[in-house]
Image (cartoon, rainbow over all chains, first blue to last red; front, side, top):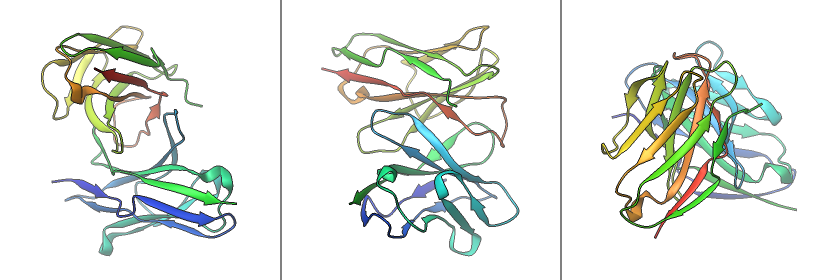
Length: 112
Length: 114
């Protein structure tokens, strides 16, 4: 069955520190992968997506993610975190047609 | 960028009642999906509508039903509400049915069932 695992429920980093949020997926075919961010009381905003090609993808707000097929991972990274990055982050996978499968999310706290 | 609007923003119902949630898709988008996000969980796919037809459905009982209108706006109806239906309900639209489309999410309707 298709699934997405985000092993870290909460992560706390200091402002200016680097960040890596983990995402592992289970999928039989070539997945289409996404990272979304959700601020309190808001819907989800797309940070970046991977469909094919270069395995390192750049997104908005200085985020990037790397697709590693051998590890079934799609980790999100940012070299220097800003206080405004505090939010919940969701990894998602789709086969392509209509159904997106989301992970349970990682809540990021940023210390000043 | 979102352009997807949902109403109401908050709703309180009692067990056994029925509820209708509404979604206006972003201009030019003909596909609408509904997701349920329980507290502390990721969104779970309920169903998708494409050109007024249900195009796919997740693991939700038949008391969850929907409609899409000619202007591509959509409704989610839930009958016989249960306590576990308490959640944030998210609507998402996309320009066309297909694998390469990203979802544009609304801010959601927070439903509380007492």
